[in-house]
Length: 185
Image (cartoon, rainbow, N blue to C red; front, side, top):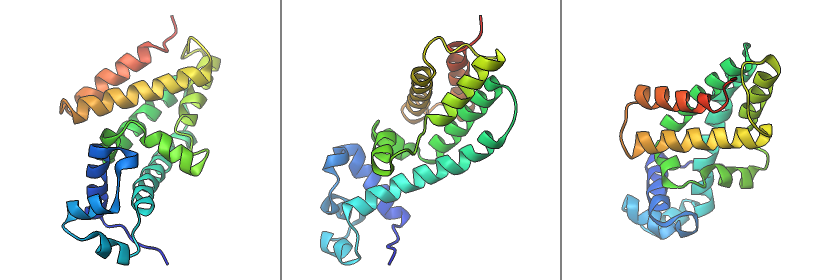
């Protein structure tokens, strides 16, 4: 039997996560946020693990679905990296409250599901860009890919979520700054 986690419970879980971190999410705290009792949630078959996994599943599924057309496309490594960053920003916008709640979101998903690699598209296009001459990663590809993904992600998240910048403004500036770090010169 699959237990559905509705949007109200997801939002409450994100709110508790933002306040108390991963280890501080309890069924009682989530129940309090939605105005129900812990026992009511428990009787519905809900657990903290189920609530957190629901958030992580949605993020991972959205990331895979959004990246698939990028990975199936063609072009230079630089073009692929730009499309990867734009796709990442789309995913972030759809999951902004969750990603703002903890900088461990991507690590939690990887720990739970193994090689759900958020870095792979970045590595691929940096490698392709190095080979076709459209990018110069300035270091070991795996290290540069991780820095590119993390710096772009958390710059975007911070400016959108904390400074309330428009999507267009943050995308333009984050893309420009990120690409300057891997340009050929």
